[in-house]
Image (cartoon, rainbow, N blue to C red):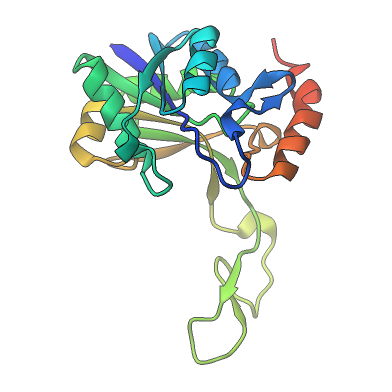
Length: 228
């Protein structure tokens, strides 16, 4: 089975200008994503989809194949799925498993990517996404006539133990592994049987702000120092 990894990395970023070329632990975010994809034994090809020449050069230097994305697929409201479908159309129909990695997650573990690919290959799931377990008490504005907030995964009148909370996870955004045929047919990343891949909470940081970038840079040595 052919496994293609696609890293969408457009040039425009409002929260963190030039985000995909900013560095964590001395390497740009796009180079880190390419490195994680190339280190995954199950991945046959690594593609970076971008509209930015500087990102294209960095991706090429890191060892990825670069696909220049049309302007229509590079706007603020363009969905990542559009870039993925465009990359699949360029690469061809021989792809069996699609791995979608986000450069905004600087600590992607290639072993966790390989494990997710194996689950899709074995038909255990059509989609496997990176997630962390979140045994927390969730609250939201009350939907009823009472003003205030109400418990979402628990009854406010009874405080359960954390062990009694229903199983729940939160996406990290690091990677999504999908059956390529199913993705083409659905046109979005969640279809068929969907399963989470529980990843380490310390590696789940996703960068959307300058503060998160500084935090990731500070954590890089600590997190990656223990990796093989």
